[in-house]
Every structure is written in C-alpha cells, then in structure tokens.
Image (cartoon, rainbow, N blue to C red):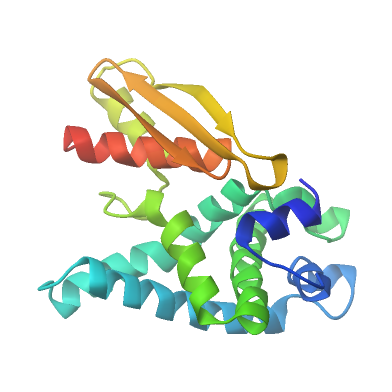
Length: 215
C-alpha cells in the first residue's frame, strides 16, 4: 500500500507530511512518530471510552474498564495496523525490522501515531469515526488481546472442528476507497461482513460469526 492509499483509507486529506512522520521510527531519523504517538494514545483512549459509553447503557464502570482495556491494548492496535497494511510503510532500520517483539510494539505505536496525526489535522470527530469503524471487529471478544480471526481459529481447533474458510465475495468502489465483502464459513455456520480492506472485512466477519454462534 502507498501512503496516499493509507490516507484515503483513514480519511486523511491534504498535506501528508504529518502522516509520514507518524510512520517514521526513531531509528530512521527525526522527527519520529513518538510525539504523535503520545497524542494518539490519548485520543484513542477517549474515543474508545465515549464509544463504549454509548454502546453499553447501564453497564458498570468496572465492565466498561475491562472492555476499554481490551480495545486499546497492544494486541488490538497491532490488529488494526495489519488491517491498514502499515508494516511496509513504516520507515526504520533493517535491524529494527528483524526483531519480532519490536515489530508488534512498533505496529501498535504507529497505529496510535496515525490517530494522533489524524486528530491534529482533522479533529476528534474524524478519529471517532475511524475508531468505531476499524475497532468494531474487536468488540466483545472473549479474549480481547487476540483478534477475531485468531480467536475463532483457536476456538474451532480446540473443539475439534475444521478451520474456518474465508472467501472474498465482492469488491466495490475505486482502489483508494474500496469496500470488500468477505464470507467466513465453518462447520457451525457462516456469515459475511464488509470492510475497507480484505483483512478488515475478514476480521469483521470472524467477529460477527463469534457473536452469531455465541462462542
């Protein structure tokens, strides 16, 4: 994915210099994404808190806190980074790229930095829309640190079922603003969902199947 495609995917318009900074690790030079990550961490926490408050009327503060923690943790941010296809766009040294633990941390930090850049240019409303769209596949999963596809696969394997199969049913719209429809099927059932990328649609479908089957 090119920087312009990412900008279209997340709704970032105009000069992309700040977005490029959000994708620059400190090993690649300065300015890096660290200051933007600082902002993005705060706006992500606020966006998720406001979203959960509206989604769950009557839920206790303790329950909201558990859901909130699951959605803003490293694993959830890494899952969103994979939806967006961030890894090839991040500027860093080869040594940093080769460290697997560092990869997950960098992906999560970069996701927050992208949100920070979006907030500074387009405001909280744009961040709120993006979070509610691309974190939706991670809602209400039994284990919030895992994305929906991973959790579904592990659950089916543990129960002795065949692995789920994902099929892309349709693609609509131009490349820079495409909408993909993906179906996930297993021996227990099937369902389809739509997202801005195949990965996002697959995650949304997996989460929908988990909820449908009450797994």
